[in-house]
Length: 495
Ligand code: SF4
Image (cartoon, rainbow, N blue to C red):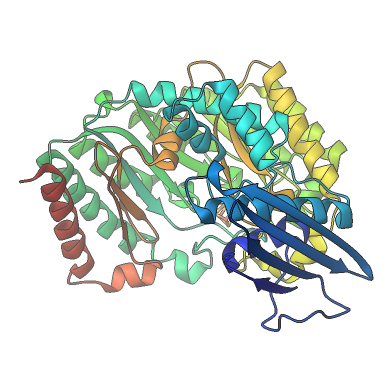
């Protein structure tokens, strides 16, 4: 796609608007109109009272133009008014040219529930905040309302959170094989899987050190999350080693939530989940993404829906009280009929938590080569799938409790977590809303340090790949991390 900007609109923001109407586009360095490519020209002018933006779009011989003016007095900054005018003009031109109305309007770059919470913290009521989303950001009323429902659920949890609490994230970046839509850095070949024992040795040392540091800082662990990859790629013996380290260092009876993101049904056995239950795990993810076996094969999942049913039963029989299951809307080969079948089947199983993702293919995924083909599928069909999931979950007694959007997902649609009453996955909210420190260990993990008044946030990145993590035999990164954490807490506490 070619994009030309005249005036002070940021290129990043303009590209985000382009992707709403031309999903999967890559941007050419040349910014002149070309007959074979979508073209957008954005022109910002100002008079004494207004920011005025004209958007011209062309594609396959069709053209559309729209102009919008926003009063400067309405916004706290010129940039904000100009961006709103640009978004609205783009929305009208895009709708006219492509015949689609993005469900989230021009709301980009911020989590919808956080935006609602911020508006409410500024003194707006819930209905005023919903009105701003609908009128200023052209958000579909259904989406504005689900964002408000989630903001209220999150607010309740945040208000009841201990201000000295924190969480521990443990990264297991290994999978039994690679799914075609996945961009996550995860080792899956036999040679790389043979690194697990060494990785675990180092990881257990890091867990012990990190818990000692948390205690020394006077913080209280509220949740533990073992994520991946697929943590149940570990053998029963390896899981036993991991859990033993955790139990030696942490009184898990004092923890609010302890999640094992098992994930792939083809790695789950009764013995592994018995280890988890004995270690105090309270929440486990058993994911299938779809109940359609042909689609499972197409996306490279290496398990069938029958394997999922078996794994779900193992999880139920293990006594772990909270099961989460993920589905994805927009998978290749899956239309509304197949997706709604998956939702209906899943709801019948009554997992405590259900997470519905919208397909988002990033550059590192195998599917990135055929991304534009996949994304060409009917956005209206995917929108219908996401709408159906929200209605079906609500009718079955599930409440939406967290939401996030990824740039460049199909239809720019959202990912939503649902929970039966009293079962929300707390870690997800703590991590997403950046309201408590998350101490993370292992390759690819990112720690987030958050001051108790939330005014200061600092991220610490671990080595991305397990081989880098293992090659730091001197513990250089560990020492740097410790120093960063101590400095952060010393500064915010004025000690
Ligand atoms: S199991 Fe999950 S993390 Fe592993 S390759 Fe598949 S999608 Fe990626």
